Image 1 (cartoon, rainbow, N blue to C red):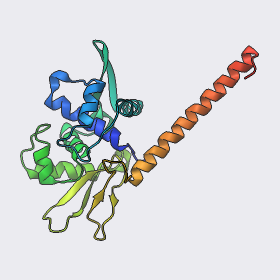
Image 2: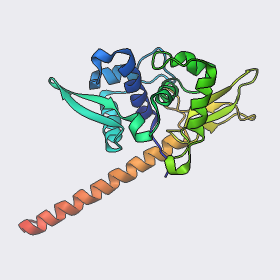
Image 3: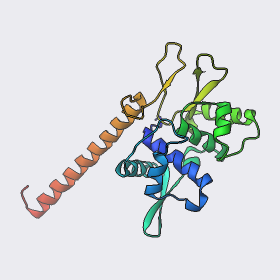
Image 4: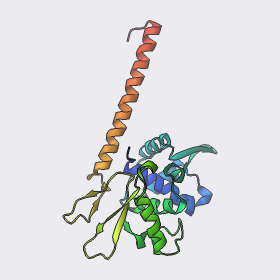
Amino acid sequence: MPLLLSLLETRVLGVLVEKQCTVPDSYPLTLNSLVSGCNQKNNRAPLLNASDEEVQLAIDSLKSRSFIVESSGGRVMRYAHNVGRVLRIPDQAVALLATMLLRGPQTAAELRINAERLHKFADISAVDGFLDELSNRADDAGGALAIKLGKLSGAREARWMHLLCGEPVIESADATEYSGPSAAGLNISVSEIATLKAQVARLDEECANLRGLMDRLYRELGVSR
C-alpha cells in the first residue's frame, strides 16, 4: 500500500529533521516550535499558515504511524521524528528527503547545498547515489520515496521530488512542471485528496465504533436514547 501523507504532515516531519540538526538544544520540539517551523517564511515551499490545531492533528496522525515519538519535557509535550527507522533509510537519505519536504522539487546540486546543515555531502555524486537509492527501492522495502522529474525549460539539470504525498501532479505539456498544493490551498494535488479521503474514512469508522459502544452501554444500563 503506497505511503500517503498530507502536505502538512510532510512539513511537520521536515521541520523535526531540520531542527534536530540546526537547534539541537531545543529538540525535541514543542507544539509552538513546530507551528513556527511549519509557517516559517524562509527556506520553505510552499509557504503555509497552519494553525495550532491543524499541526496537532498532523502530529497525532504521524504518531499513529510511528513517524513521531512523544515525550514530556517540563510542562509541555515534546515531539521527535522517527523517519529513518520507519522508512528504513540512512541519515544521508533522511537529510535529502527532509530538504525536499521543506522546499519542494530541487536539482541534485540544489539539494546538496540546501541539505548542508543536515548533512555535508562530499560531492554531487554522493547526492546522486542516495537519490538513486531513494528512487529505486524495492516494493518489499516500501517502494520508491523520490522521483526524478523532467527538466524545466532551459534548465541543465532535472529536479527531484519526494513521493510521501504520492505521485507529483505534472501539469505542463512537456511534463516538466511539478504542481503541489498552493500556499492558499486553492490547488490540491491528487495525493492530498487521497490522503484527506483516507482520513475521513478513518474518522467515519471511529465514529461508527463509538456509536456502537454507546448503543451497547445504553442497552446495558436500560436507558433509552
